[in-house]
Figure 1 (cartoon, rainbow, N blue to C red):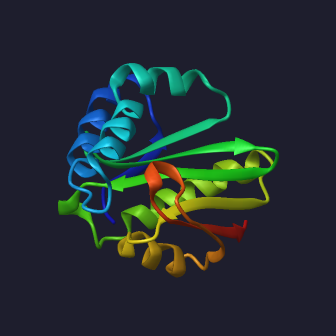
Figure 2 (cartoon, one colour):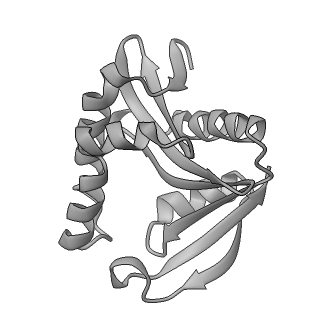
Length: 159
């Protein structure tokens, strides 16, 4: 996509990322209100600033011109990249932005010695399940009554 830039998140874009998280997470129909509230707390400006201090955290943002349109956050532990969230504004979906975010995060993780990606997908999140299949991830476990009493799939891929 022309004019798309993906970089590690810098402090000047924290508020934009926080706003995007609020727009997207608040509309997730498969999450309870409790789940939305707790997940949104992770994306307050203060919480994002704390995350950026964690060496295990990889936080990248997609930008067109000077506008943040999406982001992905993951954590590197013991050679595994755990993908926590990938969020793209609804008006910019279906343009491979999430895929570009994933591949850029994967490149950084490989440099940091990762050999595998793991992620959790809520069982009713059809869009994310299709995305994981497109990236050739495999469902390796089903977690029943997990976070927020919801069911999840654990997906993995060698990188």
